[in-house]
Length: 293
Image (cartoon, rainbow, N blue to C red; front, side):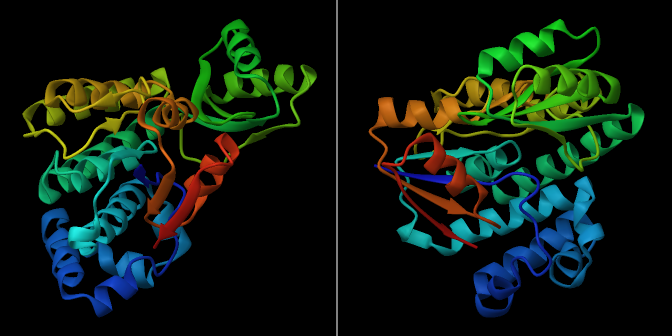
């Protein structure tokens, strides 16, 4: 069985999507529609901007969403997923590609999410760190022992977890994690503590927008970040999407469940970069991986 997966923040690069825009009329029209919906020409930043332009959360998230979704749409009848999943932001791309959300509605939600997250980052200085070569349980126990806000944010693959929280909380956790035998506990160049309680203000704003949006049943199950389980019910999908902003991304568990419950054999990554293909290979070497960007 085949799954299509969609990347999250960090996969962006200058020039992303330009080939699609130049060589495919449907893609060109969708990009122009996005410029209209967003109220600014995001294509100028995607195709000809700087890396700094693309690093702004309010630009990064819609840009990656657009690249991923438009790729899926241009596949036409070839896009026949047995299951889908997206890493963080990528969950919105997956939902649009699988027909649970319209293109315009999905783009508006992503824009709202990006703006709300950027504002939350500005309100409280915070950060994230990648932790390598420790069991999940050890990372969880050490984060819980810190007298500050810090928690697992991304379960990316066995032996790779990203933690998220206040700067002091992440610093204290990194010190303990290294002492416990972590190969690395490296702070990331991000604007804030994604997938942590510090995103609560963004969570509240996004929840209002999601509740108002029209969701339909997707063409196939989506394995959602919050519980790593397959969902097709629109009300469940909505609730999980709202919870996702302050909860960890269970990517390892999602891929493992796809394999055990759905007999997954092939994964295709749609969007910029190839990070998810690498993570899938670290979760299971038996899966065939490929990508389009």
